[in-house]
Length: 195
Image (cartoon, rainbow, N blue to C red; front, side):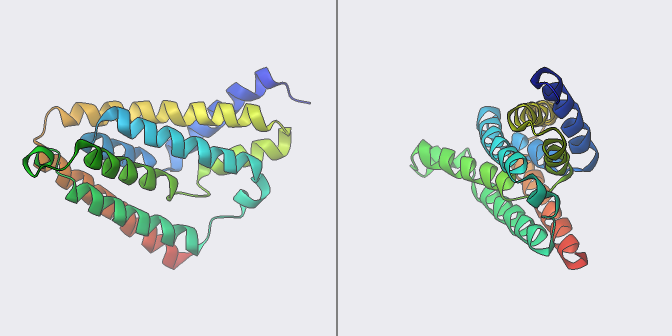
């Protein structure tokens, strides 16, 4: 039987490598960090990622077979919805049209959470975590290590987004973030046609 102390770093390493090699969320994180407050993006990413990792470790054998036409289709639609929400949310305009700040915050949180939670189901990181649980039977350790790996990946992507955000005007950032979500949506839809 594998120990908890061993499984946490093993899950961290396995999921991190799988996520860095075969996942598009890095681009989503970078794009959203260019557009929204880093704390908001990280909070949405942390909630969505930990929930998805929990599903992966609890439903391991199901997640391994989950990648299908429908997951790609749902991912594509979620990316397009995120692109629309990003495009429509103009941070400088929130004060000008007397909208409450919470409305802008809510839209940003919704866009970020949807972009992370509704996309990339059955991705390499989830499949790696699910396979590790099936082998080790250590749900908590795998979930903890996998979630920590996702947070590490997120921190790197967000650092890149923050560096870019300080160098470009808001209008350009909004265009780049929306375009990035549209490209990811097109990629997801093209994968749905191939599945």
